[in-house]
Length: 95
Image 1 (cartoon, rainbow, N blue to C red):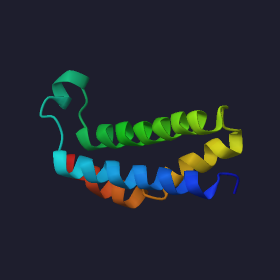
Image 2 (image 1 turned 120 degrees about the vertical axis):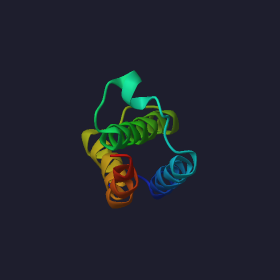
Image 3 (image 1 turned 45 degrees about the vertical axis):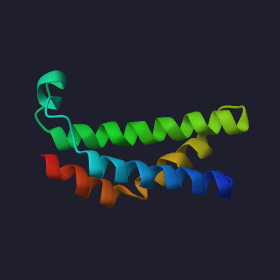
């Protein structure tokens, strides 16, 4: 593992806290009409995963003052994937 433990902890906390915020706020009733999507849950799941990976990559750049290596990038993705069951279970409720 190439990510430092503090960054890993902060990223995991971000993922968990943001998912909890989504659980309490719900989804916009206009998603289907604005984004022209038929599977709202799948759309929201993809949006959430992209948001978490993007936020973690930005945080990495700010903390380390450089782009992540390919291995570090994959580790960041894996941090999000570690929560895939909970993420999928929540967003599937919108389908």
